[in-house]
Length: 170
Image (cartoon, rainbow, N blue to C red; front, side, top):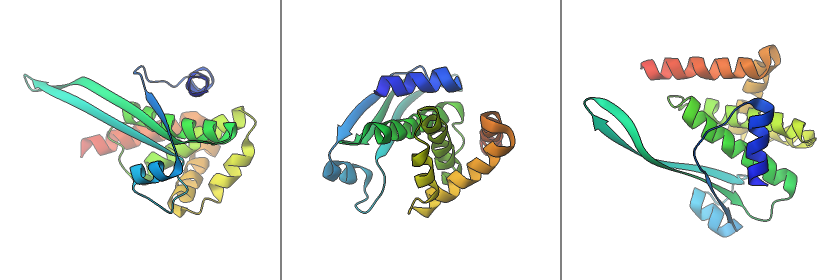
């Protein structure tokens, strides 16, 4: 199902990264210890470890490990939603590496996963995003919905590119 979600994002949105991603399912106790939260609604976690080398003043990637942890025993719709959200973090990391503002990072991930939920016929999960008890996520999602209502996914990608350029210039 993980490969299906990754493939659907590429097929439907034309967005992908080329590197392998490791997926691990974790029980609730292990997952909450991993993310460092014990009263959380989080169901997934994206982790990246990259090693760089400087040669003649040029920084280049030597190796990278990309990992997604997902809470085990999720229903298929929730699993797809969670994986799409975490894969959007992977996309954001590769396409917009300078964007670090939590509101933009999470808003982008929520927006991409919402588009995919609609594609899969799971719009009810998008309503849950609006009502997320973790208000930062709900606020970020609403912000990206507003951007998307104007110009769709293209507008969201343009916004992220602009934020990447601005943050990279600092």
